[in-house]
Amino acid sequence: MTNETVKWLSRIQLVIEVVVAAGFLLGLIPFVYAWSGGFVLPLTVISLVLAFVLGNGTGLYTIINVVLALLSFVPVLGFVTRIAGAFVSLLSINAIRRRIG
Image (cartoon, rainbow, N blue to C red; front, side, top):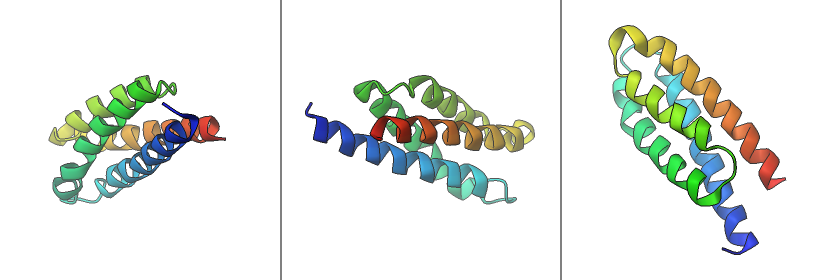
């Protein structure tokens, strides 16, 4: 891949992580996670694929986010995992921003 392609894919992953973090935060509103979970889980998987393709050091963050997105559907655990997922997304955003530079 060319350097320009890597930068564009990194920007796409950055936008995906921002949307994932917003989805986790929206999920803190009662009954909204049923809606936001519809896009949070697929986007975390896409971000995971991009992390492994790009090798940008966010693979662990995205694996954690996929697990947290799955666990956030559990009623008792959901609130805590959504907060943790938003935090992990912010860590991933920071790592991607440093790579894009």
